[in-house]
Image 1 (tube, rainbow, N blue to C red):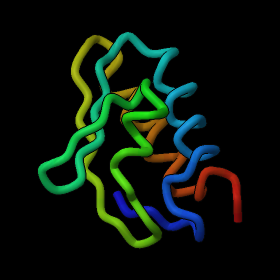
Image 2 (image 1 turned 90 degrees about the vertical axis):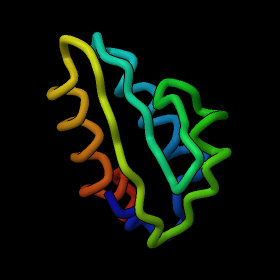
Image 3 (image 1 turned 120 degrees about the horizontal axis):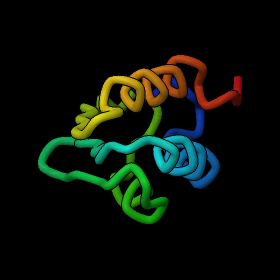
Image 4 (image 1 turned 120 degrees about the vertical axis):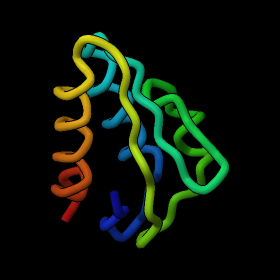
Amino acid sequence: MEVKNGLGLHLRAASTIAESTRSFDAKVTLLKGRHHANARSVTSLLMLGAAKGAKLRVRAEGPDARQALAAVRALFENRFGEE
C-alpha cells in the first residue's frame, strides 16, 4: 500500500491504524523494506519512517485477517481522513 497523505505515517495516522487493528483477532504487520512494525503499536509504526509515497506491505494472520486487511486498506485509501 502507498502512503498517500501529505504528512506520511505520522502520529495521528499511526494511532488510527493501531486503534483500528486492535478490534480484530489478527496479528497485523506493516513492512517497509527490511523493517517491520506491529500495527497495534504506535511507536513501532512511527519507527518505519514512512513518508508520503512510501510503499508498505501489510500482512495479517489470524481468524479476522481478511477483515483487518480490508480495514487497513480503507485507511490508506482514505488518506487516514486527512485530505
